[in-house]
Length: 421
Image (tube, rainbow, N blue to C red; front, side, top):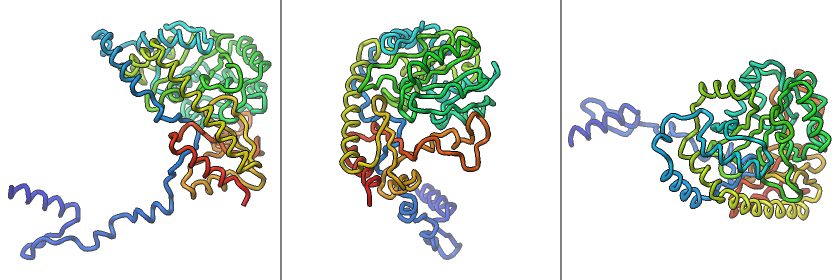
């Protein structure tokens, strides 16, 4: 015991909490308090958001825990022992078969299990595609507003980019120029919120077929539609020229890190070879569990339940803005998990985000999703010193993320930010 006490005292001396002088005993070190950060001051200078209305995440408190546990138990009871070995880099056959059936039924995707590749999240899936695109050569055309991780990922893979403006009909495809591939969010453009118009959908398919080009279809929230019939996948019209990308991040939870690609036959071998170097496959147990969740019908039931909940939240958001901030125009709300809120005259995105932060609310301005924010100008040229605004100042409001008990308070803070002084 005496040795243990001596070791503890020695460690405290080594870390500077105590001082030991031979013949004078051991004392608490002076001015220790000055070494401890002033947490209150740090919190005041950079307040932590209590509420979060940024887009990109569902309400993870709605994750179907009981159904997931039941599915995991059934899946493990049925799984062969070799399921826990290193397996096919495309992913478990049970999940690929379940997804082939589900995607055909829910999104009109034409796929066989052999052409589906399971990845640890969309970012990795896109990185794999960029590696294949670099080997094929040519530029990738992306929507001028989109997922912020896309431009830096493409740049890291040395894939040249072209930016396509977005208007009320979706991406302006003519701006793709000489690109060899384009990436679209045709069902619900992120973050503007418009669907790709029928004539542009036809134009995209013709573009791909005419030049043996490739389309990456990011169907990030295709399951959530409210005021319109579902928009089918582009992939169904050109399965040999369209890579369909989906994810469980919006329907279930981003922490699962489960995404999937439906890959044209010509791309399958090089993509799987690249994937084998990056990751063998995602966690087997989660793959088996999701397969069972889909097979049992629990996945569809969960989507129907949260779709209704998100529709009600959207309606509450629109009603609150109309009542308390009538000058803020709301659009892009027929589908998805976010709304585009144009700011009242004179209010900049930076000011709105700052006001919200002071109220403990995290918000995202539209400009943060622009290709120019990643150093990409129109048509892939270097950005102008002061690039012209492509869209009026706006906020991209994700109404799905807050748990239900916090949603009303989050919206109240949003309307306070947008209301006239």
